[in-house]
Amino acid sequence: MQIEGEVERIQGVSPEEFTERYAAVDRPVVIVGGARSFPAFTKWGPAYLRELLGETRIRYKLSSTHQHPDFHQPTLGAMFARAEGSFSQFLDAITEGPIEKRAHKLFTGDEQYLVQRRDGETRIDPALAPLLGDVQIPALIPESQLYTVWTWFSGPGVRTWLHYDNNGCHNLNAQITGQKSCLLFSPDQIEALYPFPQGGKNPALNCCAVDIDRPNFGEHPRFAHALAEHATIEAGDLLFIPAWWSHTFSHLGTFNSNVNFWWKPEHSRTNATADRQRVIDASKIGHGAESMA
Image 1 (cartoon, one colour):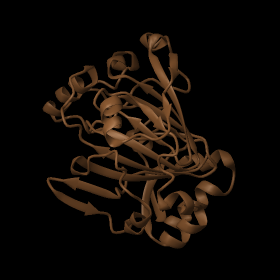
Image 2 (cartoon, rainbow, N blue to C red; image 1 turned 30 degrees about the vertical axis):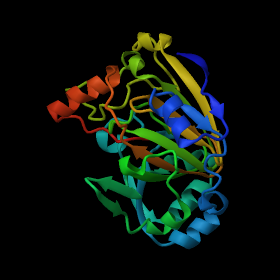
Image 3 (cartoon, rainbow, N blue to C red; image 1 turned 180 degrees about the horizontal axis):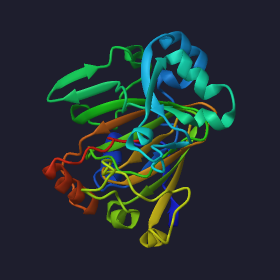
Image 4 (cartoon, rainbow, N blue to C red; image 1 turned 180 degrees about the vertical axis):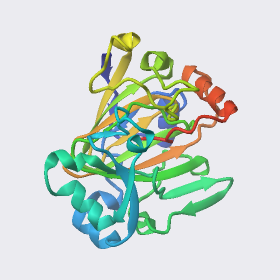
């Protein structure tokens, strides 16, 4: 794998300029400080969230390592393990105890979304509804095209497996607390990333067989020539991930929280990754995770 360079970082952009320069042409960008106006930016520490959600029951991802999912596990049940408990118990697990174990648990909207908008109807998860008062939809997003809003909470060391979002949406990732590092691969790189094949044992067809932490170039020789862009997002930053770009995140902060906004592009895309997913959707056998930032 070769890193071509850093994702462009800008400060301040109008919705019109954002659409023209980035969303319409599928170019990633980091908007420095773009989420600092969210009430969550000054509120979302563990103590505040414990008070807000406390005994609320949640489901979350469970791994025996720092990788989510960990595709080295011997069974699908182990790869996609989930656990359930109070939000306070989850916070304890990701902020206390041996640091190497804090990455074993990860909360994402894959378990419990915050907002879904489908066919003109808006659904809010009642368990997470108290978080909504701290979140605002960025003006950069056409609200009529909003698809899903997710929240994420993690401790240090989490690695989300390399994948693309199979919902065909653009993604604006708001880092609220902590820090993340991201590698992004354009849609034409998909064959070099070895996505799990149709008809294989792994049903997460939007995920890649390559382990970004320990790539095996003997098994995946094309990955040696894959081209990536790198981005680091600090607390208060926004990262725009265009539809169909593959990506993987390292969660670097002591306590990381994010809000992700997905929206449907005005026009569907034709590229190697989108075309691959259309074949999967038509065959009705692809059901990978929507996203794993």
